[in-house]
Length: 415
Image (cartoon, rainbow, N blue to C red; front, side, top):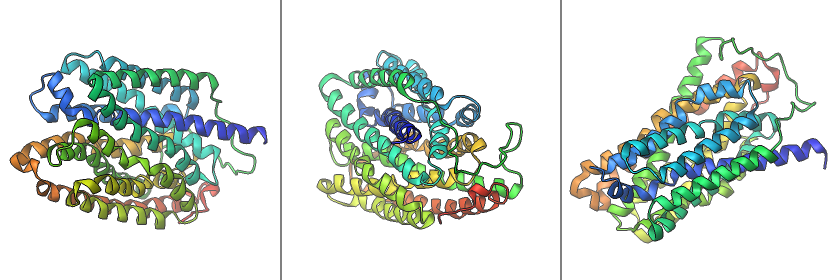
C-alpha cells in the first residue's frame, strides 16, 4: 500500500477514536441526573440538566475561534490538546462537591471538546476530497461508539459505585488516549496531487464575498440547529421520560438511551457513502423517517422503546456525516475550519438549550410527568423541528454552486 494511503487511513481511524471520546463526554451524564441532584443537594432537576447545557454551550460558543486556529495551526496538535483538556475536566468533575465546581468543570470540558470538529472535519475533507461523505461516515463510527458506550457505561457503573466513578474512569481514559494520539498520529498531509487547489483565501479575507452567500450559510446553520435541538432532546428528555413515565431505573435508562447510537455505527458510513452520489436525496430521507419515529417513541409500549430508539438513531445520526460533507465541499479548504466553527456555534447554542429546557418541561408537567401521554405534545413539536431543518439542504446547495464560480474544485456537486 502506498505510504500516502497508509497515512490517510491511519489518520482516519485515529480521528475516529478521538471522535468517540468527544461524544462519550457529551452523553455520560444523561442517566445520572437524579443521582447528581441528590448528591449535590440541588433544588430541582433542571439544575442537573443545566450541567450538560453548560458543557455544550462551552463546546459550541468558542467553535469559530477554534476554526481560526485550525486554519492556521497543526490540526493534529489541536485535536490532541482538546481531548487532553476534555478528559482532565471530567476526571476533575468526579471530585466536585459543590454545584459551582461542577459547573466550572463542565465549562472546561466543553472548551476541550470544542477543539475537535473545527480541526477534524477540515482535516478529513482535505485527505478525502472525492469521498468526503464516506470518510466522515467512517469517523462517525467513533461517535456512534462513544454515544452508545457513554450512557451504557455510566448507568452500569453508577448503579454499583455511584455517579462519580464512571465520570472519573472515562476522564482518565480520555487523557491516556490523547497522549497516545499526540505520540502516534501523523501530521496533516498535503493535498493530493490530483486535486486542483485554486488560490486560497487569506485569513484577513471574509468567509463569504456577498450578502447572498452569508444568507445561504446562516439560514442553513440555523435550520440544522433545529435538528440538533431535537437530537439533544431525545437524549435528555428521553432519559427523564423513561425514568418518570416508564419507571426505568438508572441502569436500564442508560442502556436504553444508548440504543439511539448503536445502529448508527452502520448507518453513518453507509449513508455517508451513498450521499457522495446523491446528498440532498439521502439526507432528506433519513431525517423524514427520523421525524416519524420521534412521534412514535412515547406512544409505544415500554418493551418496544429500545427498538424505536435504535431505528431513530439509525436514520437520525446518519444525517451528520452527510450534512458535514455538504458543508465542507461548499467552501475552500483555507476557510473550512472557520466555516465549520461558525456553523456549529450557531447550531450548538440553539440545539443544546434542549438539555436545560427538558428539565424545565418535565418540571412544568407536574403530575403528568408520570404518564406517557404528558409527553405527546413535546415529541410532536420535536418532529416538526426535524422536518423544518430540511430547509438547510437547498441553502448549502446554493452556497456550493456560487462558491464553485471562484473555486473550480468545488464544481462537482453530489446532489
